[in-house]
Image (tube, rainbow, N blue to C red; front, side, top):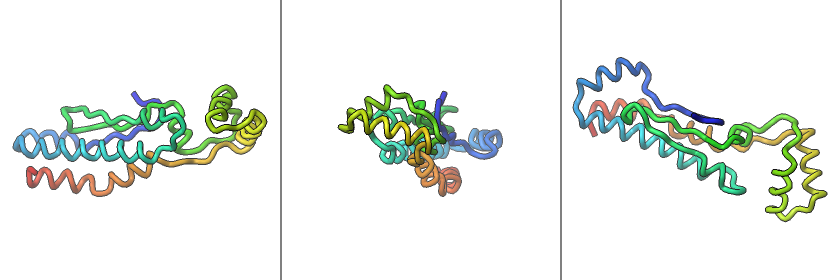
Length: 154
């Protein structure tokens, strides 16, 4: 599904968890669904907020999709260049047409655009993390929140 970056929210020991969940109350299952959905939406929201903005395509490509009756979710970046922005790149010659369009949006002349292209060809691009920090933030306490939902049903 995802072309670039993705995180899947699951519960360790899913088969055992599903057996336990089937024997638990509807209220508890709904509580777990809320934890999964809230965590997925939190990752999506924070990643969109922290994504670098040029055209807005990168941020708008960040999606959260529930599955397994809402007991799991995947959050992913659908823009092909999402991983390159997150992690940076090694030296490469960028697609010149895309770089020229970027330069126009930034008000740069062609000389500056070609100088940037040469720099990227020599040094690559630096990382601009936006997805990883969101995952790290929302992963903290995830299993505790799931266990609390199972215990309290809230």
